[in-house]
Image (tube, rainbow, N blue to C red; front, side):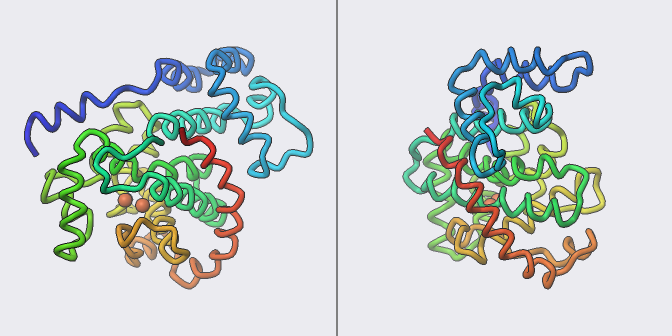
Length: 279
Ligand SMILES: [Fe+2]
Ligand SMILES: [Fe+2]
């Protein structure tokens, strides 16, 4: 990859300043729910997005949540942070594809499906970062959107090579960019100061390393990504098949994944509300 290409990745805009502030507040034990709610409430469209999701069947509360403060008290800091990040990224990267080689609606549908599958796996496997599972699945392929947005000609070339040479997208990306969408996703998520577990899971979702610190979440998202293929929610043939070795290393097998199919589809239906966050 050329030096100026890396510079162009570094020129990917930061998420709104408010998001950085919210991320810092979440890590500060002295911050009260009231203070956090006050900061989130400064962005009215963010508030509307969050309340729409919280009041949907996704959470299934029997009564209406009317304020961010109530939401923070009920759902906790981490859940609110994850909702803020999901809403902000989808809002920023929901538009049209400049390369024309990439259908963002299909992309986000696949991403929501991967988030839903990640949630189901996280509950079943009882992983320690279960709360981050949906968000990680939702943004695991953000590197593709970044490539499409900031390097449209090169990305279109990588996609063209998939079709003409029958290679995997990660292989053609590597040939054109010297990096894959997983590498670029890791770079950007780090720049955006996303939690470490999410950064590594994005970077490793095509080659999970179960023995690393956040390896279980990466293995989980890798499996969730492959699960979307079985229900026709993958982007073409772009998602890899399950790495059985990685699955075995985290103590699971393919038969077990098969049994989760119904729960996954049910979760995907509930998660559809996230499509409403696209601009
Ligand atoms: Fe991917
Ligand atoms: Fe994917």
